[in-house]
Image 1 (cartoon, rainbow, N blue to C red):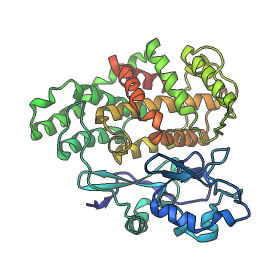
Image 2: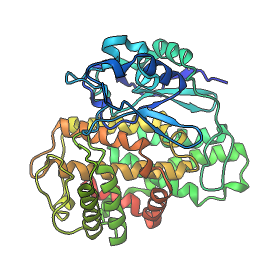
Image 3: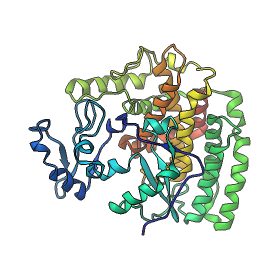
Image 4: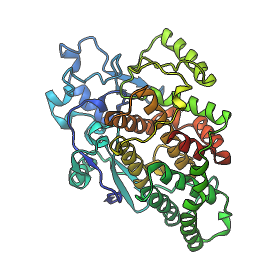
Length: 415
């Protein structure tokens, strides 16, 4: 059955400004109704689309379709004025359902679905527009029209092989949310508190606890986590070589999600990717930039401290992580089979990636607000990116979590 819509315990904003960012690098999957609408629009008869392929199909028994992308990664229907051609000619209701609903997203969590907004949208990354509360009614109409309401789903495991009822699961995720939203501390400190909470939880014998005792345990660990994290910020020790190698390989996966990245499909590009993978594994010399418009940098230079950053630069990143955790999007969507602990560790790892990319994008200059916005957009795009959701990435997150290495990594790049 469908779930009632609620808002997370934070203020999120959004309004469409027609920037076209959501039409770049996004897979627009089509259901049967979308396909009927697109085909009924007869784009093969439009002078701008004659002879052009607008649909891409995959699968043998039952084909699934998505809209074609241009060579620059943009949707085939994006005009030079950053407008949707379908919208211009046929109206908003003629677009695929995913385009009408995005960047809003519903996250099923127990007896409700949280409404949140994706930060790949520049407006929401900048915290501009109307509060999400003003979008609820319009969203309800869309999900009813397209039968897109989220259904009741089972909770994720707390740790591997420890799945509990939603009540106990929400006691754990609520504790993590409170730690990450605790405004008394800077963002990196709050994420470190969440990591300490996860480490403590993983070492408990959860199978011996009934529901009320597990809820009580979550409260005790929430109180203990900030104290446990203190030494991380006193030492600020560099992570070990193996962790740094795994981190660079992860950062390479993220780099192609940058808003300024323009994809290229060619054998030359594949060869460049092979050479880039070798360079990222070695971690020495020039950083491959994938045609991103950044100044040349070395891997060694990206380990330097950034120093004090203006609060406005970090605000988009802070907003992204607060929304990701408070809406439970990190734990309840996109990562089937992952536990809450594993998913939160992936969140903390993405913080280190964001700070690494901030260094790469700025070179020798001081990061500005736009750099923080683009870093938040990049991190949001990774939340649905297949290479960052599968078994290999799960293994990397697990390896980097050993011996508090993941916490050291976050603290190291926050310098």
